[in-house]
Image: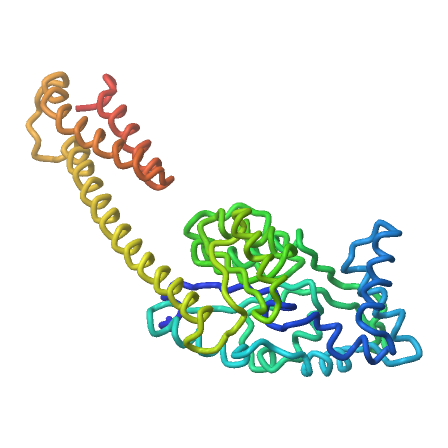
Length: 362
């Protein structure tokens, strides 16, 4: 087994627009190429959504297809080229490798995920995606006809359905069409517990994910553009509304506030995991000891050299030790509330019942 496969995994999930990039990706090349200004495009898109009871993400994707007619061929290549030109906050390009390397130093594997209402095809055009820094990119995307031209939305990711991707990450069920995301997973089947998740976002569209991660024991961080006082008002509100744990300037360079904060969180997760490993090691040792004690009591029933005494006398001889062992098991079962302990407890009760069965052969 590879060493990394034995290490705990930390998932850092990012929004994209105004989290990793200072502006909406569509406003950094595409809108200008269809001879519209940014305000005009979003006004048309939002009006379409409002007037038709339409999802705002479906509306902007429809508007993109409509406005491309006669101006450009809207295909994956064109969208990737727009993505390659998207501006990024300071330090973003170096961030992912540096944070992953830091995780290994402290004994965890760091994985990076994008959960965005922006376009997957544009995000795939960025240097970070091309270099393979993202474990998964969950974002809106187009369906393309036989000529490779965008004709229909394939995925539309909005602020509410973003949360499904957190559960996919938690369970390791990455395919967007894999229905197992709704299945029950036992604790030992969970790939990345919420306690090992960090969500980084900037606005109201990230609130459901931020709230979910925070409530489940993970860490939510609001980022803001230090050049905009309005954006900092948003993180103030998210703190007041108990949506996030922390906020920081969207400056991803080494040694800056966000870098220090995320490394501190990774340190905390690493330390908690070491304590958890120690705890379960001690629990396992206790379980083995208790199981051995019970097994010895049960084994006494069928030992070949045991003297042939009467049933009642033999029962009185063993009952106190046997009952004490069952009592210890009950205490641990109640404390741990783990199915494996409850199964063991039931097994031992059955053994006790069989032991005192009047019809049992002595």
